[in-house]
Length: 78
Image 1 (cartoon, one colour):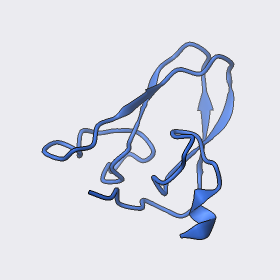
Image 2: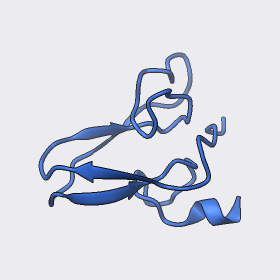
Image 3: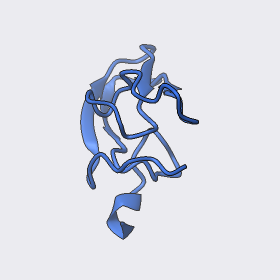
């Protein structure tokens, strides 16, 4: 099963050190790039991510990053 491409560009998000987020891996969430449970009944699940420093992170929205939830530029080849 392939994830849905939510968009072909990363989503900048201000993250807080030590605060876990749940990244949408299926691409179906209406709350991109975060999980809203839309994956129910599929083989996908949210990916927890806890940053070590507070900063703006560029989260993958194409769902093809090899460094998920962080963007690695994979969207450029789609």
